[in-house]
Length: 162
Image (cartoon, rainbow, N blue to C red; front, side, top):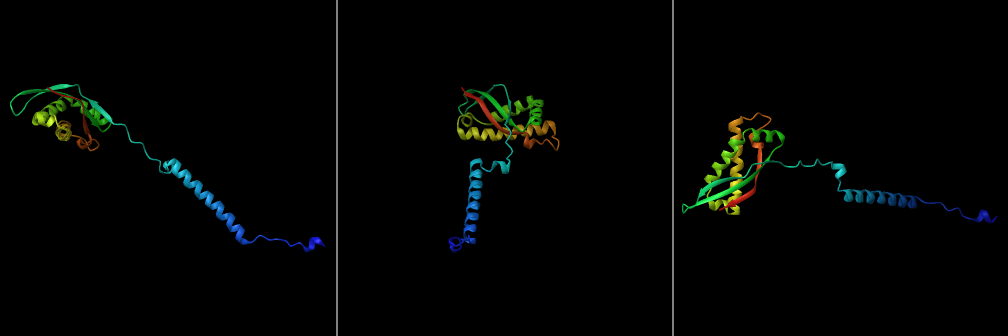
């Protein structure tokens, strides 16, 4: 009879909802932790950027006159940042013309331009335009290989002004 007097306790819907809410919170927390730990890279699958392709030119010397008519020797080593293997082939095909265009562009700038950071920045931009223009003139690029995408940048590996 003692067993009959025992009350049977039933679980209410409140406790079930509480357990479900806890499981859901753990799942959301685990997902957030995974996302922040791995940066969501697995979901985005970013394509790595290609390494730059450089065409190195042998160092050469250009003679410049300053405003006082004094001679200065400028030794330059230049690396051209080109847009892939096709552009490398195009630049090496017309390398003598490219070197000549670089010399002419440097002669247009004074010694003062080559010895200041702002002048070097302007010279870099002018060299990119000059080299791309030379390639366009000599090669007459095809639609798949345009001169606008040939040379992206110019870097000085050597720059000595005497």
